[in-house]
Length: 277
Image (tube, rainbow, N blue to C red; front, side, top):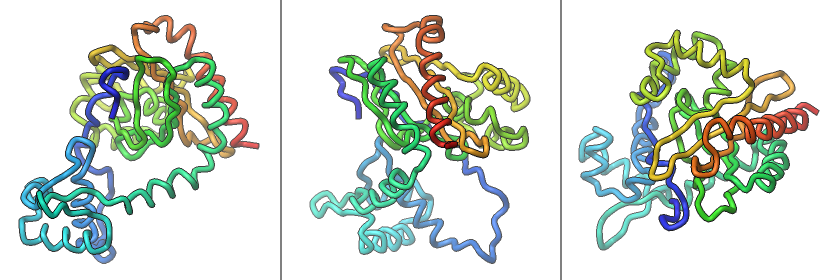
């Protein structure tokens, strides 16, 4: 979480309206695994510890079923139980998955030198961002050296369509995919993007693609500006975005476009060149 005395918080991570999945093949789908994952996904940075009743209510699985899944996950080492409060938290074992995602990410490896140079030059928060269905996820972050800054912890999620990183990445997607993302997006997306439907959102993304970067703003205790550009692999696929986040007290939108966007674009181009080599 951000330091309240020095950092501006990015706000609570919004939740998806629903998973972006196709029809489920009941012959292959293991329902019990899906329910177990539902229990794990109940925990987030706003609800770090939960009681059995909390989990039963949040998952809709009922008390008896929740108790069985919780017991199993605890025995497997994915949940910890406080004997005094009888509340549960995610165990350290779940970090194995995050470590695997980061350590095996060749695109991030290729982009990191350009990210580091951009961070040193601007002193702002620089992040590697990828799309996960209707969200964007912060995969890696280089913290700003400014006393007052944007703090984006690894794992932070935002709706993709209203985020600068999501826009530069989804701008390369087919219209059918954009429509699926729109239908699965958080209810805040139309208001933040001013798009009334998927077709209008596609026009916004086409403009972003033509520009080669995206800029979005968030209203917080201190306003923030986000500037992103996509990184492409050898096949030309947009695999991730380099994002720069700053405060409007340092850069208002016109200044961010003039001074910061060219630097972010150059960093993304350098990362693309490295990844394509």
